[in-house]
Length: 502
Image 1 (cartoon, helix red, strand yellow):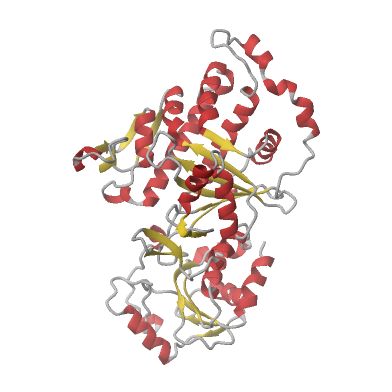
Image 2 (spheres, rainbow, N blue to C red):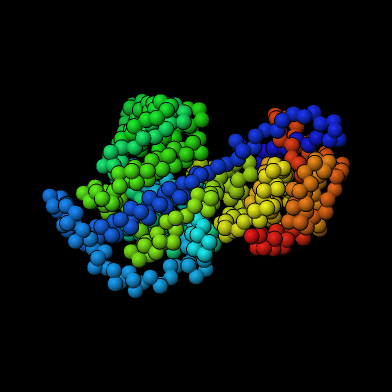
């Protein structure tokens, strides 16, 4: 793992005063707000489908409000829905409803059943919170009788065996990996994406950076004899752009753009922009008063969306979470960043895959299982005010201890810039080395109380030697404010403190 720290061995008053690197620019951001937009749109359109389309027989030539309103099937289901209002959703009793959101190209695309988007959406009814955990398509998981395969293959494998089974198979596979029940799934086929955007009259998008992708694949040309004929040059200028469905799809799916737009983070941000634009367009045209448009969109969704959510379940979820606030959305992503839980490797067949960094899924399960746990607001405010950066090291042989502690500390606002095993792993009690000379007392107090650690101002020589080796050859490393070495006692302290956080 690449180290990311620099230790200032001089007394505080002799510090050279160089500014620290802006860690926020390097920290993996995942897909900010993607859960809110994706979930709202999926639920809104699915609810609309249930209310306005199922069993309806509406003529295109007779779409006046007096005729189509009488044929809304929900009018015949009022009694059923009222009777089911007191039913509990799966997971509601445990105060956690898990829904797997899947996105795939569709039957008209090459590899159409491979899921490019895999997101675990978790809902907590008691406090009306939602969380999103993005799972990369290249993450490998064990599949029965097949060994380790990319997780995006599960849907395709299932579909080859039994048509329509991919969503359930994918939710079961993710459930096994995360060691938690996932009772629902919503699978979206992006083949209808273009038509839906066009039916809405297109969307208006602000392009943050000029996008130049010289390797955007042309559909159906993947096996063209001429290599150049397989791709087109996708160019989109910076600024406000009116996009039809085809351009919006290209803007969303581009993977090989030059510069800043070539990263997965940038692609996720573009997806967010499209979803936001679709949502705003639906609201702006007051779609509920456009019955013909509703029917056209529902025609697309009937073919390109599948879910095991029942009508009453969709409506209940909508009623509970329709007014959820942005601040109540938690966003997390599994990635291969320096502090990420995944690492790159090549499998036996030569394919690129991502595997758990610590060799099993325990760290990932800890993240998913504790995603709603939070720190007291006052403590977060104090740590954020002091902008405390921390280096977390495992001083024991307990696998994953440093990562679990780091995940907890991030909730308090600590900027975790490095996670690793310590050079010595015989620590009974945890130790904090304060490199600020007492300049960040509130953060130090919170860190001590959270980890039940002892405090030391001077670094031991063995740690100085270890740091010197790690920093050799690094350019512009970041200096932490604190180095936390976890001892045996931290194994129970971290989880106990987490459970008591408000």
